[in-house]
Image (cartoon, rainbow, N blue to C red):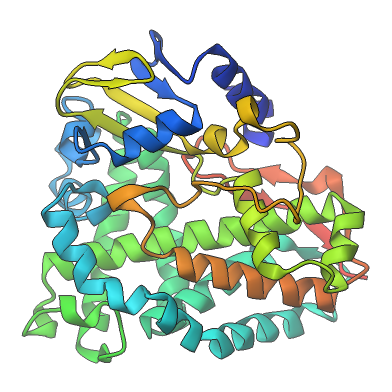
Length: 384
C-alpha cells in the first residue's frame, strides 16, 4: 500500500465494498469481508475462530520466540470459548459501564491536568502531547496502577503492534519478543502492590511475587488495547473536527451532544479498522461458501461507512444517530468500549472548550504506516 492509503484508506475500502460484500483475494489469500451484514454474520458465527494458532498456522515467526508465542496464546482476544469466556468473565465487572461512570471525575481530572500543561504552548501535538498521555492516565485509573507503568508499557507495545501487523517477519518477531521480556519485568514488579480495585488483581494468583502467565499476558493485552484504541480515537477524532471548522465550533460551543459526537467519529474513522478470522468449518456468507481453514479479513471500517446503504457515508453528521460496529459484535465485543467512549467524550469536550479557536496545521499531519490500527502519528495545532 502507498502512503496515500495510510493517510486515507477509505477510497480503497469503498472500492472493495463496490466489488462485493465478500470476495476472495488471490494476492492476500484471504476472504475480504466488507458489507455490514456480512461483517455482522462473520463476527457472530460459531463457525469462525479468533484463535492465534488457527489464524497463523504455519505463518507466524513467533514460533522461533516461545515467550512471544506464549503471550499471544494468552491474550483472550485471540482465544475462542471457553477460554475466552472464562478470562473475560473474570474481569468484566472492572470494565462495566457503572464502574467506568464512577471514574468519570477521575477522567476529567486526567484531562484537565494535561490541558493545564498545554495552555502556555504556542503549538501542541494533538497526538503526542494530548491523546497519548490522556489515554495513559485514563487506563492507569481504570487498572489502579501508577501512570508511569502504563506510559512505559506503551513504549514497548510499539514493537508488538508492528509484529501483529506483519507476523511473518522474523526481525519484527525478535523485537516483539524483547518487548515481552521487558513488559514481564515491569508487571512482575507491580504484582505484589496491586490493590483489589485493579482489574489485574484477581489474575495475580495466590503468590503475587511469582506472577503467573495469565496475569502477565492479560496485563500486556490491556496495556496494548486500552492505550492504542483510546489514544487513537481521541487523536483522530480531534483531527477530523479540526479539519471541519464549523463542526469544531459547534462542539466547542456545546451545541452537539458529546455522546453523539464520539459515536459518529467511531463510525467515520474506526480505530481498529480490521480484524482477522478463520473458518473452523464450512459456512456461507452472502451466497459465498467459505471453506474450513480459509482466513478472512473483516473490514469493520468499510462496514461502518456502509456506502451501499448510506447517501452521505463520507460526511460527519452528529444528528443522524448512524450505527457502527467499531467495537465489534458478538462474543468478542470490545470489553473496554465503555472506557474508550467515556475517555473520548471527556477529552474532546474539555479540549474544545479549552481551545475554541484552535487551528490545525494541515502540513504537519502524519499517519502511522504499516500498522493494523488507525493511528495518528502527529499533528500540530495552534491552541489559540
